[in-house]
Length: 119
Image (cartoon, rainbow, N blue to C red; front, side, top):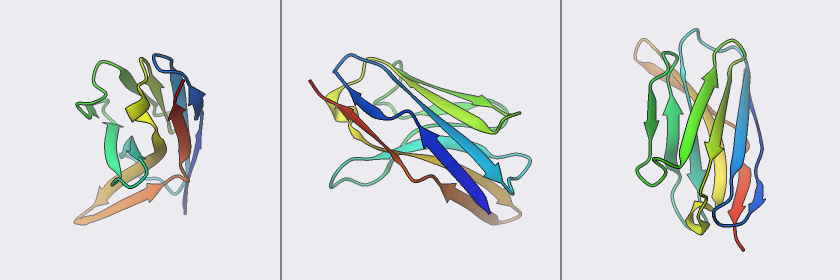
């Protein structure tokens, strides 16, 4: 069993900032990737940012320069600092953890946290 608990969503004005956090617990592999995805109404879920056990990061082009993902391996947590937020960032944000064992991929999702950017 793997549990992901997200926090930090809310309502913010355009140009504002929010910080999301996600804590993973349970039977987690020794090396894994964690990340954030988001889903806006009537749109598919999309990658926002990911970070590997080694610290390599990957960002969607739409958030580069505005969002920063960070990770604490000792605590199995990640955070997403979101600055210069835009209305188009409005979505439900989901935390994800994933790893490979031989040829099989294991992936788990949090329950999601709403981020609304509006004046």
